[in-house]
Image 1 (cartoon, rainbow, N blue to C red):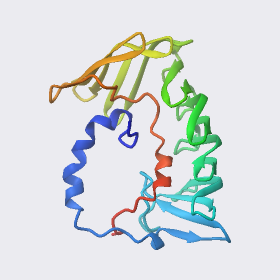
Image 2: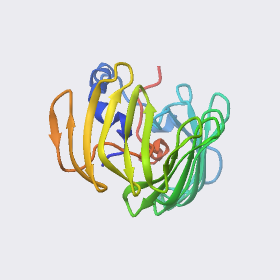
Image 3: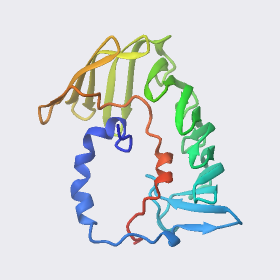
Image 4: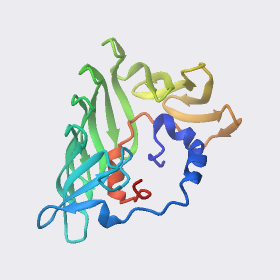
Amino acid sequence: MNRYCYSLLLLFCFSLGPARAQTAALPKAKLNDCYRVVGKDSVVFYYSDEYVLTPPGCATIRRHVRLDSAGRFQGFVRDYRLTNNVLLVQGAYRAGRKEGLFEIYHPNGELATRGRYLQGREVGDWAYWYPTGRPRQILSFRDGRAPLIQQFWDETGTQLVKDGNGTWYRNELGLNLSGAVLQGAPDGRWVLRRLANDAVVVREIFRKGYFSSGVVVDTLETYQDESRLEIADWDAYSQGEVYTLSKVCQ
């Protein structure tokens, strides 16, 4: 699954069409305008919040990283918010792929996520926290498959999933995704709703942890190939590896 259209936003990517059409006539920025060489093999890249390369005047994030002879990320990487110099991401790359411990931070500087990569894939247990510093969840990643939900707490500190069993939810960008968890996997009916009016957008059915079927309510589209809902957070920082250029900086 393409995780660029992540989690709750996955089913709303079509809504970006008109906005994209309005800016289609603008030329793209030049790559040379979106980075600065600060050492023999050290580079600072400038990105938007979506990790699209953009000139510094329009950027919100800067990335300090080294490049190998093939132009791939190599060694330690640090991402900072340009407005206040807050650390957003720190980790390391090997031959262009994330390797070892990564830490992601909330805009207020609190730790948001900590886990390990192996050859570019999440592995083992990943821990997550709310911006307040309270624990949020622990997910277990398994060889490219959907992660298992081991533990989950709400914002008040109440544990809703314990040892892989309970109920899980996420409120994000005006949407709520929720469902039951059995032995770490989604079970029964999972629902994506709009928070503004409690309208159901998507329903999916799982049986003993396996996806069964789903329906997009607005269009009555049904599907049985795979789930279209993501439990894991969108790793926006990974988009920096793609070298996507923004439109010119206005």
